Image (cartoon, rainbow, N blue to C red; front, side, top):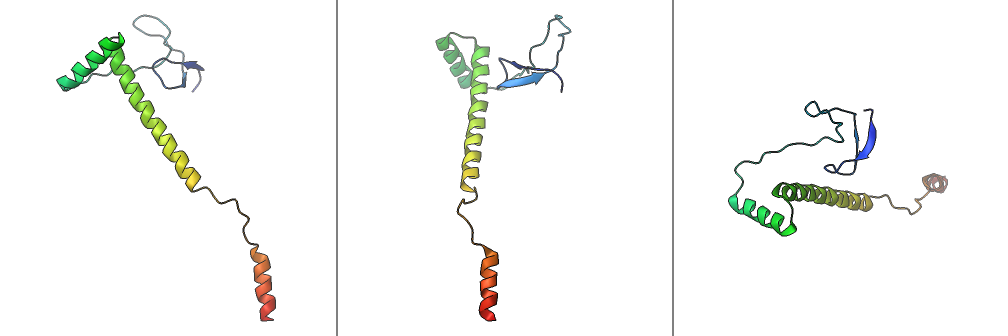
Length: 112
């Protein structure tokens, strides 16, 4: 994929994107974003999100965006930590192994 690396405010880390023009407004698109509609959300959850947004002084949309982003990042970080722990646990031992050729010759010489 050709393009350049930029920091996208709605993406995780640096992303490589193609140059593009928004057909609606004719502006260059800095990154790809998704639109999401949530249906049948429990009213208690919606109320809690509205309260948190008001407490932080941000819009409900920004609160939902940051909550979803934090959740994905937390799960991704947890996966990375588990993977690192598994790699460390299954890492080959650094102790020097026995020279099997020497042992085989010794056995052979002992048998005659």
